[in-house]
Length: 618
Image (cartoon, rainbow, N blue to C red; front, top):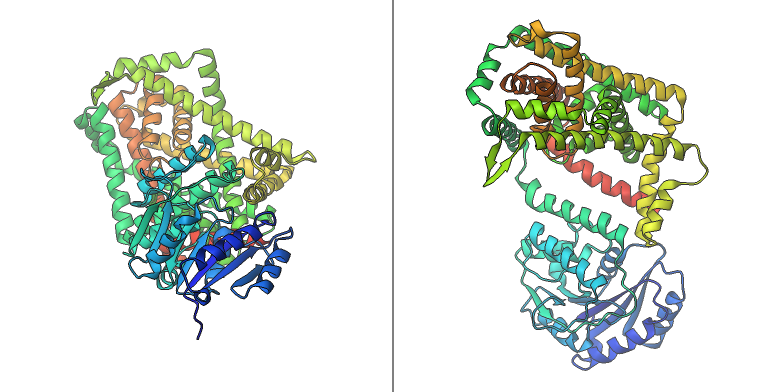
C-alpha cells in the first residue's frame, strides 16, 4: 500500500523554459508542511514537441517523488489533467499552472482544505474583494465576462472558475469526471459547476496572483469553445433533465398559443381576427394542407441529390421522413436543435457521418435562402434601396395605430421599415455567402482558413478552421458541379413555389379575398411568404412563430386592400396549416423509423461531440 496522500499534477505543454524551476518550487513548498513520503508531483506532459519530455524524465530519475506521465498526442488541458489524476496515487488531488502565477504561499491552504476532510473541492480565486491580483485589461475583461456568464447561466456561486489552482478529493473527482465532457479549457469550470450541483462542499478562497508571460486567452477558442461549452452544460444541467416527450410537446404548444395570443392582442382587435378565422372556408384550408404536403417528397428528392453529390446514396422516402422529424424538432425545441436530429437520424439509420450530415443541412439552408431571395429578396433589396418601402410602411401606419408598451410608444411605420431592412439584409447576406463559396471553390487558396487564422494562431483555431472547411468544402462540391447545382437549385425554387401556392389557397379560403385574387395579390403572396421566411431565419422562437406572421402581415397590409385583422388571420392559418402538416408528418415518421425526438436531440449532441473529438485527433 502506498503512503502517498497528496498528488500534485502539473499540466505541461511545451514548458521547457519553466518546468524544472516549477518542480523544484513545488517539492520544497510541499515538504514545508507535509512528510516527504506523503506526496508526489506528476508532470502531465501533453504531447509536447519541445524538450519538456526529456526534462520531465530527468527530474523523475533524480527524485522518486516526481513522476512523468506522457501522452503521445494532445489531450487538451482538461484531458491531460484527467489522464494524470486517474493514474495518481493520492487521495487528495491537486493541480496548478506551471507558470506559478498563483503565489505558492497558498498551496498549504489549497491542499489542507481537502486533505483535512473539511471540503471536497477547493479553488483559488482572483475575484474576491480581499485578494491581490494583477489583471491587465486583456486578461481581466474577458475573465470577468466569462465568470459572469457562468454564474448567470450555470447558477454557480463562485466568483472565479478558471484560476489554475484547484484541489479535489478522489471521491469527488471520480464521481464527477465521468460526466465532464470538455477536455480543454472548460474542464475545471465544468468540474466546479457539477460539484456544486451534486452538493459537494466547495471552498473558494482569495489568492495573490501575478500573470507570467503573455495571456493564452484566444478569440476563436474562447468565443467558439468556451461559449458553446457554457450553452452545452446549461442544457445538460438545467433543460434536459426536465424534458420528456410530453413536456416538450406541451411546452411547444403553449409557446405557440402564447405567441399567437400576444400577436393578436397587442396590435389588433382580437374579435375581428378570430371572426375572420372562423369565417374561413374549412375545405379550402384543408386543401391548402394537401398542397403543402406535396412539397415534402420534393424536399426528400432535393436532400437525396445533395447527399448523392456528397457520396452517400439513400432513398427519397426515408429522407423525407428524416426531414419531417427534424422540422418537428425545430418546432418543439429552441435554437433549431431539430437540425441535429436529422444528422442523428441519417447517421443512425444510414451510417452517414455527422460532418456530412451537418454539411448537407448547411447546403440545404444555403439553397433555401437562395431560392427565397430569387423569389422576393431581390425585389425587397430594390425597394429598400429606392425608398419604395415607404408606401408599404405608410399603408401599415394608416391601418395600425401606435402601441404603448412599457411606457414606450411603438410606431408601426418605423417597425415595418426596420423589419423589411432586416429581411433585405438577410437576403443580401445569403447572396453574398453563395458568392463567397463559389469564388472559394474556384481558387487555389482557402478563404476560410485564412480568415480564421487571421483572428487566431491558437491550436483550437486550427480545429475550428478544419470543421468550417469540411462544411464549406462539402457545400462547394455541390456548387462547383453545374448539374448538381441546377438540380438542387431548381428543386429549391419548386419547393418554395409550393409553399406560396399553399398560402394562396389559404387566401382564397377567406371571404372577400377570393374576389381580389389578381396578379397583384399573387405577387404580394410570393413577397409575403418569402419575406416571412426570411424574417424567421434567426431561431428566436420555435418554428419562427410570431416572426413569420408579423412579416407576412406587414407585406399583405402594405401591398393589398386586405385589412390588418384579416391579414394576420391569413398569416396565422397559413403558418398553422404548415406547422400542423409538419407535426403530423413528424409523428408518423418517428413511429415509422422508431425515433424518439428527445432521445435524438440528446444523442445527436453526444455523438456529435465524439465525432468532433475524432476529427480533431485525425
